[in-house]
Length: 306
Image (cartoon, rainbow, N blue to C red; front, top):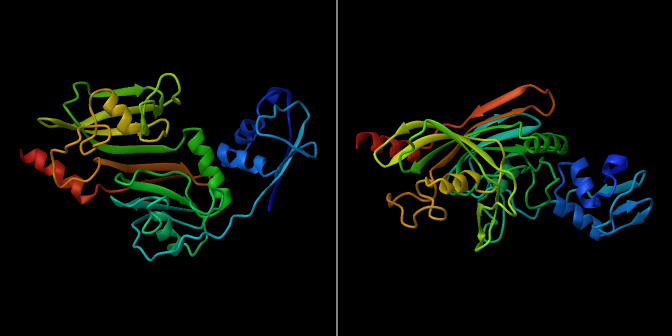
């Protein structure tokens, strides 16, 4: 177990303890912290507290981070398209149709199953047994770069960079309609769709800050090929933002037309092409590029011909 101990300053006075710990240790999720508090693992001045406890100056907070459990998820020998790998991190080009981590209905053939086999279990344990090594994810039908952390120190470093929005993330997408402007920015908070909890939406009241920059790469008769740069990383961010300005992603039957004009296409045309980050150990900048998948190239070629 790893022991954490720190003292509250005047600036942190009256913050909820779960929020306070999440700010101090950005690799731990708020829900995980609340779970630890509920289990009595977090002490203030030697006494357990509830998640809504408001900290006071000079409070002495301590807790032990439980050792990561051995995953119940089975390693599977699934081929990986590796873009970068060393002792700390692994960057993989995820194919279309692959789920990143196990969840209800998807306990096998996920990226986690594949990296468990490839890394022989040497993965960070911060996000628990279902998401070993996973610090961020992309949707099932989105292709491209995903970074996997092999140890907790790497995980904490990458999580911090994600929180600070310093990681470079550039995507390629095809959207419905012809964008008139060469570039633009969608700055609109994203949260749960009030009318459909399974979807995300621009939510001015309860959403979190979300910013997507885009620029046009090529225009076609009814579609536009674009590059998007994420300033933040909310769930379905590019899909929601582009739909919100009237240009949903081709193939996205959740935020765009239910019937796809290309019958063979499964899911949105979205590819996480470029990923850039500071290496957790060396501090050097690392950038990887995932080549466009074949299906994406064929769609572009057909548009050019027509």
